[in-house]
Length: 147
Length: 58
Image 1 (cartoon, chains in turn yellow, cyan):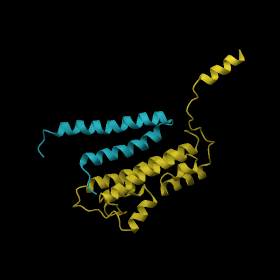
Image 2: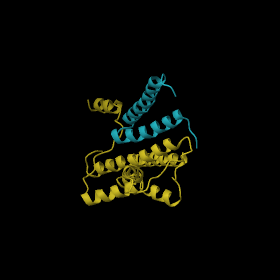
Image 3: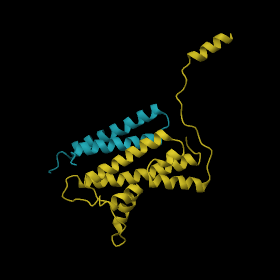
Image 4: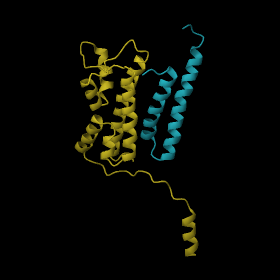
């Protein structure tokens, strides 16, 4: 009888490993993890032990950002005199440190004559907005709300 | 770097699908399924919108 049960257990396929819920971290620690994820995409997931997801997030978001720069998209500054540009700035700034570095290096000036200018802008905005989503995902993981 | 409209759309859809799949699903199988669905939806909607806009003058 015991042998039969063991044989049945061996025959059953083992479920694929899935992430488990973490113990909820304190609010300050969760916010610090989120801040690191905003500065460097994917880092918040590395800090939470989600290495694979963090790496994929970092690659996808940074690739989108670099493609946006390569397509001559524009990185918007904070300019209160042009209120509609604030939304573009907030979207761009979502990528964190790469935005600051690109500004310092003179990238993201935006070339209106380029046929891909509008696509480049969209890539740069969406890269930042996706990073905000990734940071919120890390916050949920840190708070033990999702695996 | 100059991409055609379709190339830019496909690349955009691919990168967004990866992020959406990883955020919304936990197991690898679900992620692949959901990511593929989102990516194909991007392409399908683009084709439908392009088809609807075809009669309009450029």
